[in-house]
Length: 145
Image 1 (cartoon, one colour):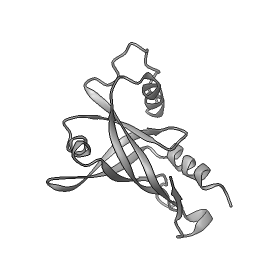
Image 2 (cartoon, one colour):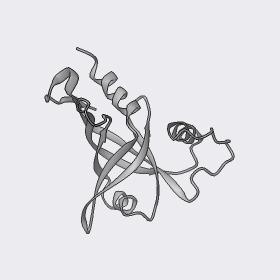
Image 3 (cartoon, helix red, strand yellow):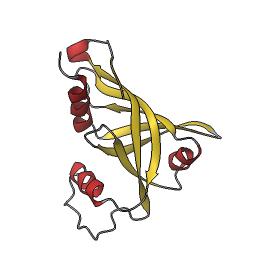
Image 4 (tube, helix red, strand yellow):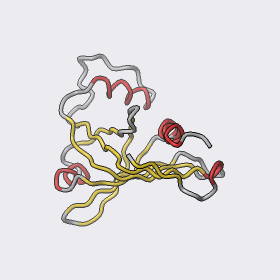
């Protein structure tokens, strides 16, 4: 059996959008964001602090998300996860380079304001469930972190 963490990284590499679920005083809210990740499976995205999901993270930082990496007609391939999110202060050039690369944009210069009023956010997953139909059918593989 392939290493689950390696397979999760494969899905993170193939995916582009993360559906991010938050909760605020108005209830549950889902927003799609372009994400990047690190070797510890932390997932990062940029958002404006005035968006509903960003405000919700300040109120309740336990969130969940999904990433689907398959195209129509392919086997199901994706992730479901939960964890704790937080806003990150600063420009974080290391994240900006990865984000621009994922969006197929030229690499920014270190002095560029890539955030343009946005902020970086991160979710540190506590649990990830892998859906990889080709290898496991409909049996989700679970990773507790």
